[in-house]
Length: 426
Image (cartoon, rainbow, N blue to C red; front, top):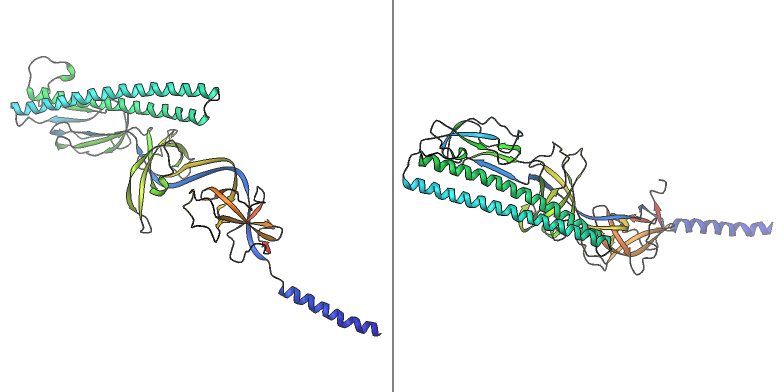
């Protein structure tokens, strides 16, 4: 009986002590976690842009006259040399030597422009031949292991670029020839020569018409003048272009444009229900322009030009369409990927740099070790909107694929503190 009376107070002390220990025991902080992965990493820049036809031609009235009604409309297909507009010339107000001399000088300028266009075609043809020779040499060196695959890809891209430049030079040559023909027709008309001339330089009388042909095969982008009526020399009539040769103009912030190089891959999304179209950066313009963002903040923006590698003849992609562009500035294979919300600056680190920047040190993460949070130092080698590519710091043992990290840790999460995963059930 005495023994039982002695155990009762001791038992009461133990129960009260356990209750106090449980009451004052630190509670686990609820956290959300994500898994560290290993895979391909891309540092990207995402911005809006718009499409435009690479080679656009504006047809103008060569002389003053009466324009016949233009029946072509935007989107109509035209062939090279097809007559797209006709003008009935008015009797010249002056048929003196001065007017004829001016027209002959314009004819000389047109002949010089045609010669220059022909020379540009020859130069572009030589550039294509040089690019093809460089590609052949790069392939031979790659087969022997003396150069990288990327060098072969760059040489192949240069062949494509120079081939497109040759096409553009030929288009310019065709346009120059048509301008030359129009200048000759004007001289013959004013001179009123009675001698026999070739058919393509036949004098045009007041009752005849001057036909304006399309310099290239393509589509009517815009009909600038529809109704018939008097027109002055140089009046814009039609815009023609080839929708199969498209490029995108992307507005990029100047601090991000410094990371973009010619040849960088680009993914262009022009339609909401379509797959992205591949492209390449062909030019980063050297001049920045001030733009006001939707939030009213002034920004310095740089135009980045990217060529569509192919559009698959998608009729939904037209001139001036809005596109969402993703420019790839860096690629890493087998990178250690941590969700972007899991990394943060250490208290002793510097201020963060823009997404994808090169400010690498001073970053930390919390990993989950059982029911404890462990603080680890990491080096960030690249970032995009979803992932950060990291490597371990001096005390970063344990940051590896398969480990779970705390996403958006609060101030309650400390090194060695107890945590409870909210996503443990999933």
